[in-house]
Image 1 (cartoon, rainbow, N blue to C red):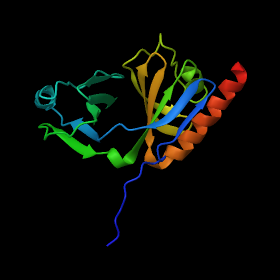
Image 2 (cartoon, helix red, strand yellow):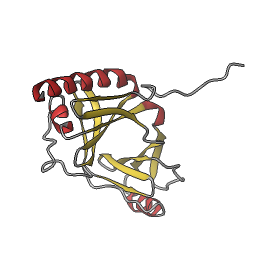
Image 3 (cartoon, helix red, strand yellow):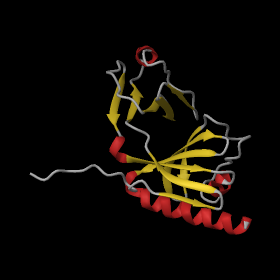
Length: 178
């Protein structure tokens, strides 16, 4: 019987160009949580056991290695932890369906500005912001993880395309600065 080896979508790629670094990130397990109508309180009780709560729109929070990311009305991604049975919610393992890319550096927002139709400057997009948007033509979830850092979640099937688009934008920003 053949032995299967799990591989990431980008085999751990990393690139630094013009002071901006792009790297494949490991978000850990990703579980989609969607509250059943009228069951928000039961779900909140289950999440409280993890020290978490459903995040407000366009936000994410982290605690003890767990991250909960707003992804829509009464929906979130719980990342980085095994999820206990949560009453009041539909849960789906999304781990194999998404790829995370970390973009960091003083010009990271400038790189994303070439591909994302939102204002990602720190004043408009503070640390802890989670945005459902597009990176060029790909659906994405963008997390502001630091003053000069972002995590970009894209469908695994679009990982290489997202990498290509971000690499090209990094090249343009580097050329402009240098």
